[in-house]
Length: 174
Length: 306
Ligand SMILES: Nc1ncnc2c1ncn2[C@@H]1O[C@H](COP(=O)(O)OP(=O)(O)OP(=O)(O)O)[C@@H](O)[C@H]1O
Ligand SMILES: [Mg+2]
Image 1 (cartoon, rainbow over the protein chains, first blue to last red):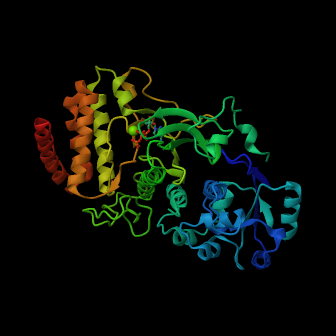
Image 2 (image 1 turned 90 degrees about the vertical axis):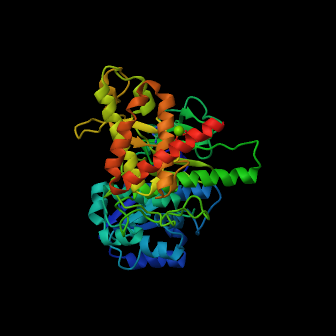
């Protein structure tokens, strides 16, 4: 488990947990579809995550947008999934970046948890997978290059592409 | 891992009043670096407490009508961000060339036909040459970019070793080469001056980065070594996507005039910039340089009429 406080957003610490080889993605997706309030998390498919910076850029955009009164989806957690996407199509962004029935690795994010210990326990109990550290190396090992290429319309998936992808997230919606 | 909030040096003074949210209430320092006519530039951190970043803010203009002011600010911030994102995608975006990014000057058909792309300059060729965009809020008028270490070329030339003309020539050639790359990528800068070109210390693979992400700077001594380093272009607030020879020639002319008035002693060496530009632009370069002569003529006539 890791807690990250983004510079300039001290009131919105992020609690993150990365799961590998998740066995019950379909169940998790169903909880979100049912609107189960015990599952107020951003569940991201790690296959379309390039790096820590990549996710943090989407988190910043989501939290800042909401603080400025610009919520485009349901809540801050769905907004993070939405803001991973380079375009403003909400259902497409959930399909591409959220959890699907076949998702293997999941990055779970909780914004400003009231009780971090309880959140961690609940995630560990609910997501059937192995937790691993959220390092760029571990994230890279989960990346599906073809899916990133498709989602961001890029030819190359590399360190060079990160700057462009983060830039696309920043100007999305303009 | 513990919350990283302790990593921020405690803010001892309140943030400057001109800062928009969320920076106005942030515990992470925003240090004013430069104050221009239109914008304020702060050094801060972004996404992680150790990543240095440049926060460019376009504050409200109280004397302008609020609706108009908002719209103009939004346009300028977005124009800069879009061009920077397009450039960072050079050679990366599917289909080659630059990605079609909405033209900042919407509705105004450019000679380029609005295809948004030049010839393409290779994978990540402009990575490091222009700052990457890290964050943005066009409603609030701010953009956060990658921090470019080093000094402006203006500062570097002022502090140069006058005996070392070769170092200056080398610097001017590198500038010409980079402007050529920019034009080739389908973008004209719109405000090329030696304050908007930076000289960043060459990052050698062995270079150590301190906790704050600071790298050793060049250009603070008066020796010729102060002109070594990689060229980076900043300040894309007036940039446009264009592949027209006229726009490109005007871009060079603006730089030529700015260079001459800022560095009168060095003015005679400006030819180095143009020569390197021609080489890096390839086949299209000659046409632009010829066009530059027309632009100069017009410039002279204009100044004669007054
Ligand atoms: N990305 C950056 N990294 C480091 N320093 C920067 C960066 N961007 C700008 N600066 C510094 O801040 C100064 C002002 O920035 P910039 O030229 O973008 O603003 P400006 O001239 O006020 O802009 P505009 O003309 O669009 O209103 C630069 O001359 C440079 O010293
Ligand atoms: Mg400037």
